Image (cartoon, rainbow, N blue to C red; front, side, top):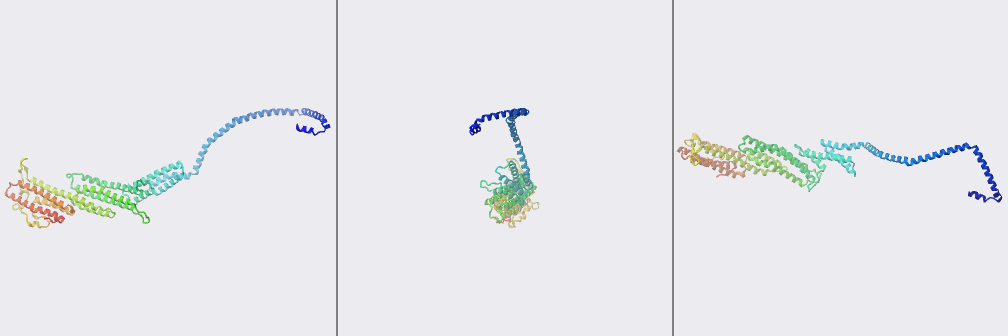
Length: 522
């Protein structure tokens, strides 16, 4: 090697010459030592050879095993480990969720109980608690940018319960016999719910007011329905079908209808004023003018829908003596409404004037028709269809005059014209048909005295003159057919005519004009 060559360069020449000999000596010595070692240690060399062979085989087997491990087992292990991780990730995720659920069990249970609690509160009328729970749920839902499904589901159930609460509050406004505290509570919760969004210029308060009026109107209509049905049934009867009891029933039903309408509308007006128009003194805001106009519009609507149309068709069918009590009832009703700004007395005059005119005219016409029919009956039957002569005519002495004065029938005098307008002339009792006619007309005028509108005085006077003329014409027709009677019969007829035209007719005009209206009748 290079070190030995360097060593040789350091030797002297004798030493360098002696170096081969020295090397040969050392070689013989090494050979001798190796030979001795071989003879003495050959078992060791055999064992070493055997061990080396075994080691080589073991190393080859190890190399093969390592190759199999690296090329086959490790990839399979890696794949198995990967598959294991994939399988356990799902389980770990589920376990993680289960652990989170277990840790948050109380909170989740509270959340899940919210819809049930709200529904229970709504069903039992605890609306404040229901709104508080709904507000809490809404804040939880709004605090998360992407709320979990469970919270979304809970929020949906809460909204359904709040919708049911809205229906419950609105049904309270539609409930019959609801008093102010219940209605006040319902309206206040509707305000707190803020479910009426302003639209088309209509504020939420106006929408709540409309809902209130609509609900109370439904209740009012339902409470009036029974009486209205009975009234319509009686009004639908014809004149021939109407009995005296039916007229009394009609009056009773109408009075009951007016009382129900008065109580219902008065409650609605006072409740609306208290809930929507009155404000605590601590607040500076005043109710919107539209709320006042809503109340005025509703009051007018209720009057023109429920009361006036029914009065127009019913009053003409009410007995004349009952009209006065009805007017008194309606006047008290209008006076009570005047305290809340709803005085409708001005519309009653025309209604009752027309009803009185119709009733009085009908009764006067009925009495006159009965008078005319009596004379037609007493004239007998015509001889032929073309002849004006009649047969079987009843003589005046048998029916037109009292038997006590047949021989000398009394006639009219100026003293009868100076008697009081409310006292019928005594001479009329001598002529029974005329006395009966007088009694019927005076009964009608006595009923009129209870309620005598001045606006129809001239109309009634004109109608009375017309009917008296019709009755006089019936008498004249009878007189013409009695021309062939005896002198005494004609004397009776002349006396009746004298009393009729000179005493009865002026008296009836005075009885109506002076006795009822205080007018001077010439």
